[in-house]
Length: 600
Figure 1: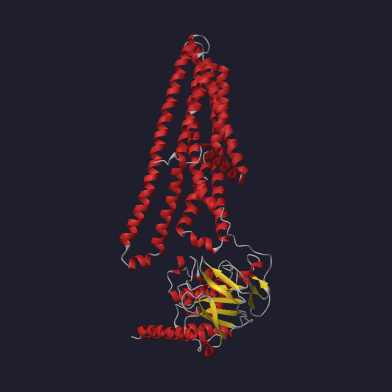
Figure 2: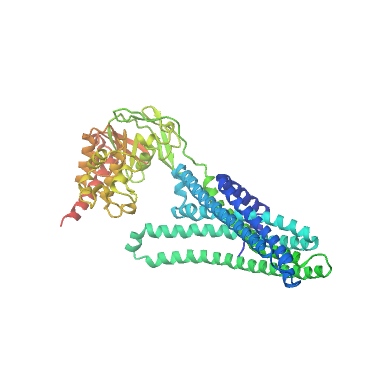
């Protein structure tokens, strides 16, 4: 059901928005549009020429031969040649039009998606956390595709405008009265489609939103398949998807029903107008105003206009549809929370990075997570960050990697503000490894290199330091083994070690591990951290630690509580802080329980 008129944008606003979208898309690839327009113009010329040829064939060949008994000699072959030439002309026009339209739509769709994804990746994580992954997938897929639907019939519609002009002029030259009837009728028919597409604009917007909702539910169901099956909630998830899908189905059905109704109305009007033109034309022949051939020319031209009129209807409805889809695409482009970068490049030095801060504070909303932290770290040190749940450990780690920016204060790397680095420079000096290791649907080597071009020796060395070389050698094709989406063929610990190798292969000067070895055995974790300390890797290492073994390997420990640093120093010194000692006891209990569970 369509939205109330008070909630619907004006007819002028909808089509102004649609025309602006068309201009924007066409300007991306004007050559493709010009090719399609050239083909459409050639097609229109062929239609007009065909009408003239048919009329002349009737007057010069058919009537003289059939009615007057004239000989067809000298008349037949020129008529056949003219018809064949027009057919070839029309075929060339159709070919050029379709190639241009297809090229235009495909290239624009690819550009819209590329620009959309590029803008998304430039936005702060704060923005991403407010948007569902399924909804963003729908914007990048169905909305980006829907926004370019208007381009498919556009060259043909452009040619249709030329056809309307040419037809009107030709009919006026033959009989002004029939021309007035034809023009008024066409304007009325087009007005019907304009009104219908405007009425459906809000429903098109609702359909785009519901497609995003279906995408969200599907993504959650697939991404959380383990949890769904473990809890036996398959029926619940199926029902959720059924409700979302049926809501979308009902709205699409409503659009389809409305579209079919308008098409019946338009087709009926076209048939009625054709009948009126034939009746009026017959009276004009009787009055001697036109000949039979001229009436056939007019009727032929008007009958050929049925397809272009349909195309104009498609364009008008596609304007509403594409405008609704583009509204959601534009909402992403309008997001202004873009991470800004400087022009500073990375340094080629052989030591770990020094970290310095002015007191930094940060919050995700109204409640502060970090409060006036000041934590200088000398180069080459291994620092463990310890604290209770919600103390701000992971937040601090993401700030050090500039995945977020502090609300106040400055973080410096070797006296250089992190915000002054160029977009690609900081990841060359700082590597962040999260607890949840994300792997791509690629080979082991591809996941470690991740778009870079390190040599085989560097990849193998990074894998060895991360404790991954041993299990990689057991894979069917070692480093060339395909891992599948998210690396589901591997265990959690194996995924974490590959993620760590991915960070190490870049030889970062600052390595940040946010509980990045939580899924490996504590003895393996100790070996990995020891190998990092013994390696020639010139890294400063910051570890968000949850195990005693990890904490004791650090040169220094920072104890966080309620977003503040309550203690800093060696392990023995921090034992005097009640909160730190209590956390270590809890860590030891958890480790003991885990170890007992592994005993047969």
